[in-house]
Length: 188
Image 1: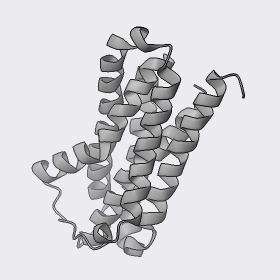
Image 2: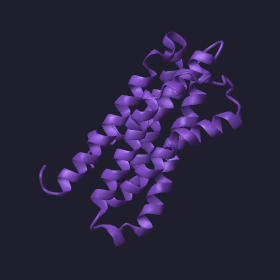
Image 3: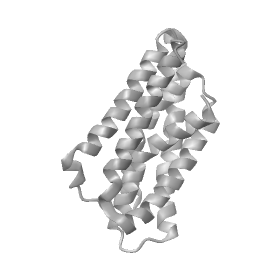
Image 4: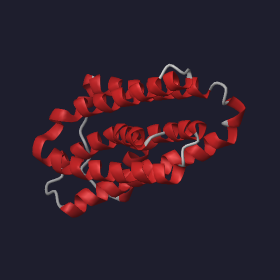
């Protein structure tokens, strides 16, 4: 997997966290660099942790199903991306209220919820034999930066761009899945 592809995966995975960070920024009375960093650390940390966990789980059975791994990767990335797009288009989610708290419990639950997709991507990384430590680190750093920026953007613009960001992230993951399939089939 090239650096550009990995960057696209990182950006795609960070869109859920970005959306929640925007909501946090909207809900916080006063946005400071420290508060933005707290949100970024939570989301970036979990976005780095989850692909590593998924990788080690996937590595256990990757050799047994390597003949079909490209199809599994396509299905996982399409499901993840499609779910992101569906959630972005769901009207009821746009009406959700966000708890502005940055306490341990609320941030832990949000960090887990926004990084579940990264667990599945980690499984695909095992099939692709991606060097997981730099990959997970890059995903974590990109998510940190995007989430911290999301808090500030949320304080400035609100929910205006949330759906567009999630749709963009979903499309990136789906296109990457098809690219991997086409490469494996020798078409690209």
